[in-house]
Length: 358
Figure 1: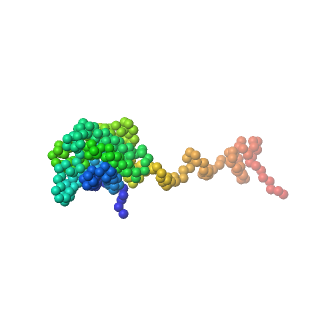
Figure 2: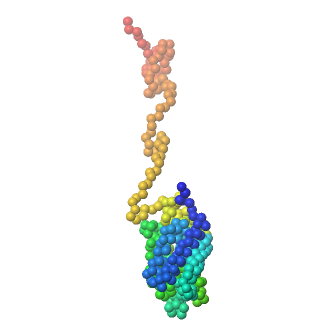
Figure 3: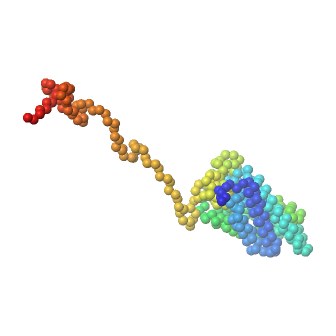
């Protein structure tokens, strides 16, 4: 049987983030393309893909699938900076692979043109006429709200059952789509925007800057303000936040890995742990059986709180006449010591006379 406490390797984290982002973009944007931009179908598909992939690979990488989530996690003290490049590279690769597959598959429809038809994000004249500054502000706000939800759900102090975390985050992404699809097509994820945008024509490529800058700004705001607004909770991991060194020993990355691996790691490392401590009781769960500590060996004689055991003293030869020592029977011819107890003063011969009865 394999050891379930093994720490995920770098390649496993890269693969998990690539696969998760691929599924998010492929199914989310694919639903938008095939449903004609239907609100319910598109919004729920984006939300459900986050839920499904978080359950599937969240224990490995934390389930970011979004460069904005990674940035918010590192600024919020949940992930070290040295992991950012790995995560963002995997997410961009997954998004681009999904865009390429959608681009190829949709050419199976006769007369398909990818320009403007790849579920890309938009604003201004190339979209619905929504002003660029309004699109920028909207995406910043939506991403900040999304990151606050993620940081709160994965907070070690949150007693919500661990299994409910991905569901809450997926529903948050769905409600964000319902509120913004007709304005910008909803990004809150640079990998999602780039993945399909590069295949959607020149206008879409020109507008990509907004859907990279705005989500990253929103994530930075949420990551920096969450500890201020709601408290830091556990100490930040080493090399996270605005400090590139110091802090406590690394605990597990942000997201579901930290929560799901509680109780499986003996080192979050938690940190928590999140992030080495034993798993905290989840709301609605019975108290776990706690093994009693092994009994301590019996206390050594003479320890405080223990009765003094009877100690047999080595027998010392008693001096004749000492208090507590039995009087010795004087043998004939052995003079006694005058003045000792049992030898009254004035005995001429210094010994007790014993007469034999007649």
